[in-house]
Image (cartoon, rainbow, N blue to C red; front, side, top):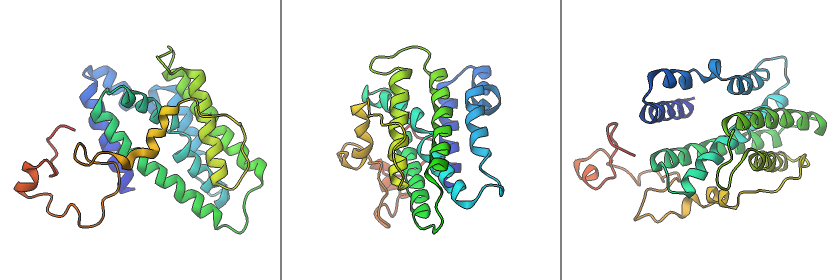
Length: 230
């Protein structure tokens, strides 16, 4: 919960930074009420958050939320990263995507420990629903084609991510789509950043950054402050 609160705070600060028009900013902040595609994604997730669904269904749905429902947005932001645009947004999103990937892996691990797993058709139905919700969202978010990215290619990517999640859950693929964005392999290279150029998007070992709040650490650019640029 604390981790998700940090994600929300980060995105809120980014919205405030990039969107100056008050009305547009309020529209984005209240996307769950003002944007039908976002509302549909939320409704899809909420339907599995009750005791009427068995634990296995909720775990698979949780894995889909973390592994599928963010895939289109993360991919679009990595498109910006590839072009060297909005470094503050792309790096903070790199850290957030790492966390969401960890959550999805955790859900897959819990599911693997269950004695009574779901029938494959039920799992496919859950994942298919997540893909449909994410597809509608990304088609609305990308009404115009970009260089190297459009809603059709993004749909293929979402299906590819969903198939990868199904394999991690121990089930067969549903779509058979290939990754249309070779540059998305950047996600798997997060830990290979030149440490002398930029802080890496990897978890730090305990104690490595000890003393962050010191004046010396601040001067060297390693300190933590709420009023500095990304």
